[in-house]
Length: 393
Image 1 (cartoon, rainbow, N blue to C red):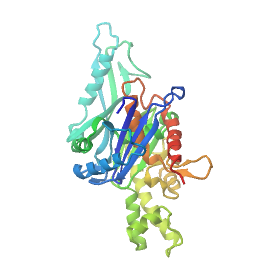
Image 2 (image 1 turned 60 degrees about the vertical axis):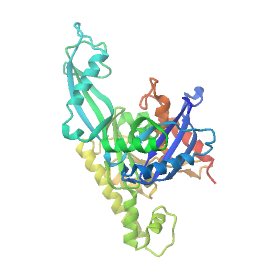
Image 3 (image 1 turned 45 degrees about the vertical axis):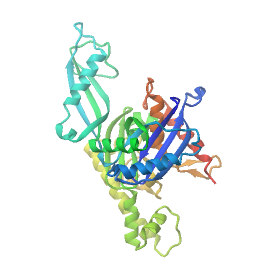
């Protein structure tokens, strides 16, 4: 594959998604342009965790084979998303003495401070885990907070507060085995919530404070941002599939019918709408209580001005934003519906946000840009919308 193209692979519990993007028009700041995508039903994955790499590899090969318009595309390498119950985060603080005799802070001092913060992580938090992402949240010079980079400032001691994302080591190994079994080299592994946030969240939202909740089939992943940086990632072992199960039990209907009822594809059936609403609300409330409990744990309950943004397949459930608003006492909106040019048709495209974000990261590698330093997120939504319009009836 040409270096002008990039591939993102998102292996979820429900589906495996592959998306190929290229650099956009330089006149529009080279926003990544989608040129092909494909998906297949997942196999060998439970709660986002790969337990059978061989079966998952077959699903990935099917997804690659289904790439639309892919006659001239050969996937050789990709940026791969890591999600599921093996994903977590931790914040640690470390410090180092300034290396230069004149006390001027250099990149070496920053790296040393970040390294000491890494060594300060409790061993219990790293047992059977690997760090896949890190970013400094705050620096102090001689005990005083500095608002930006401390380079060229003077002092005797530099302190770094650093955010680390970790993933189960076995999951990382299974990811690599799965992707390589499909004949694709793993260029980099990126936390799925970070990739999705690059597409869905705007720079003002990340700066003000926001939580992005991706409601998948068997998991709900959240990422919290403040001052433009991620401060927490958490994954809960519950998802929209639990809502389907509750509907099937509560209404005594088959799972397939329950899924259709949940999505609103079946109406006028022989059950009370009020009972259905109560079943759905009960499970969604449980999910939002888990999110609220985590926000309390990190001291951000009710304190995120940009509120909660909902995405993923489960975010299409009716009234979910109202339930989120009531449960979390935060502004809430759904990010997975984009209105087409006619103002009527909606493109359910945010399920591709992780794959798109991963492909975008591949295009940005080696440059000075990053997910959090450009306006890619704002414009990317329109790019995805334009791509998926061709599949509308």
